[in-house]
Length: 266
Figure 1 (cartoon, rainbow, N blue to C red):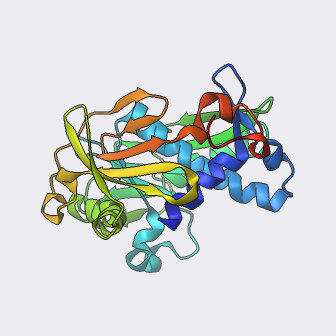
Figure 2: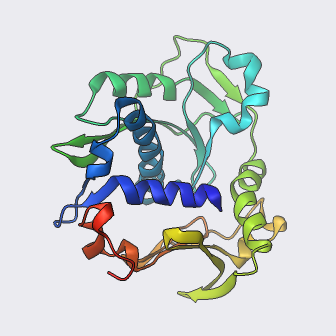
Figure 3: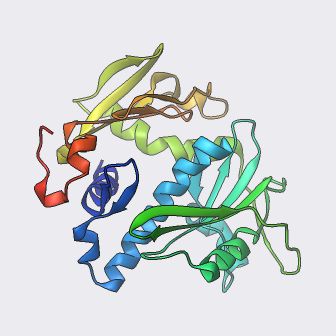
């Protein structure tokens, strides 16, 4: 719950809409010192690579590679590697390196991202179908990202990760299952024929849920993949079975204002 609140609060405080549907930096973001901006831009990069992966690449499931650091440690000591490993709905593996920049597009950052993405040679004995390098940045104060899938580079010794689809799903869904199973505020919501167990998250005015089909550990190996469903700007149901619903604080009208000027009922 605290992790969800942290990510939501970070987006709320540091981003605004510009009135034309684009996303810009907030005054609060511009007021940070360079090291703080660097940390925020890193998390923004991860956030937008998740949206890009699902909406464009058909990759609903992404996990940070460091989750598997115990088995990777002997192999990656002193070596660069991608941030994320994931899987498509059809079971193909992908590697993604996500970088964030506080200002204009950085070609050198994209080149490094491409190199890091290529370091993952195989996952579960299979070669990834995509090795994406992506940079999220701000052009004229508006948020953009640039992504590329470079040709495979086998000139370096690369990483082989022993990971199964079942283990990926177990790690991906565990936080949602644990939190929602023990949350007395959790309730059932039906959207487009899918039933979710969902609960509000503190003061960030966000409700998060998980399809009841995926609440059971028995569905870890082969969950019934749902369809993306964006009913309106306030609600998004991902094909991973995760539901995100925004309250009035996140309305378009409110998000065009600076964070300190927003209200609870916009």
